[in-house]
Length: 349
Image (cartoon, rainbow, N blue to C red; front, side, top):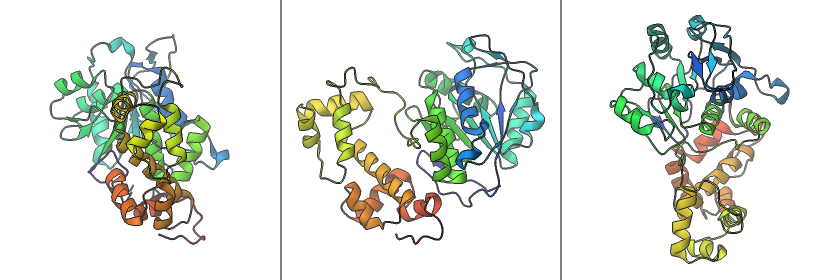
C-alpha cells in the first residue's frame, strides 16, 4: 500500500504512487447509524459500476453487533462481517452516529473497536469518517495532534471533549496523514470522491460523480456552513451573477464588475456575497479559475500558458502561483497525477 504524507490536506496532495490494485473498503457501523451518511459511503464504494469503467471496490459492512439500528425509520441492518473484515481493509469508513446521540455525543466505544482502528493505522491503512463519525476516531486516540473536522453543530462539543485535536470548524473535509474527516452529510460525498480521485484519478472519480449527479470535486477548504446557503429568489440572489462570472472567466472581472452585474453597490455586493457564500468575491473568483484550470489540466493537452489565458489568469506564472496556493501542488504535478488524456497522446506543460 502506498504510504501517505502526514501533512494536512484541505488542498490536494500528489500521491507518491497510484494505487495498483482495488481498495478493500470496510464500512464500520456501531449499534446505531444514520442512514443517509451510511448510504453516502455505499454509493461511492459499494455499488458495482464496472459498466462505467469504474473498478469494483472490495466493499463490505462490518460491526461488532449482529444487528444495527437506524436512527429513524425502522431500517435495521444485519452486517455480514465482524472486525476480521476491518483487519484486512485498506480503508475503514465510519459513518455518522445515530440521532439518538443528539444533542450530545456520548458514546462508549468497544475496546475491540479501538484496538482494531489503531491497528488499521499502524499497518498503513486509512480511516475515513463522515459527520459525527469523527467522534469515534477521536475517542480511539487517532486524531490527537492532527487536524480534523466534523459537522458544524458538533464542533464546539468535539473541541471540548478532544482538546488534543486541532479542530478545523469551517471546512468540508480534512486529510491529515491516514485520517480523513468530513463535515455533515454531503461533505462525506466530497471526501469519498476525493479519495477515489487520489487513488484512481479524475476519470474514475468523475464517472462516479456523474452517476450520483454531484460535482466531481469540491475543495476541502470550502466553507461548510453559510448564513444563506441558497438564495431566497433567483432574481434577488447572486446565482445569475455567479453563473455569468463562471461563463466569462477568461475576461478581466473585478468586484465593481460583479456588483454592477448584480445591480448593487460594491460594498453591498461584497457583504451579500460573503453572507451567501462564506467567502469574498475575489477569493471565490480565484477558486473558480483554479477549478476551471484543473479541468483543463485533467482533460486536455493544452500548455499552462494557454490554460492561464482561457481561465483569466493571463500568464502561466500567475496561474502557477494561485494554483499552488489553493491546491497545494503545481499545475504540472497535478496533471501528472490526474490527467485523463490517454498515455499515448502528447501532453504539454
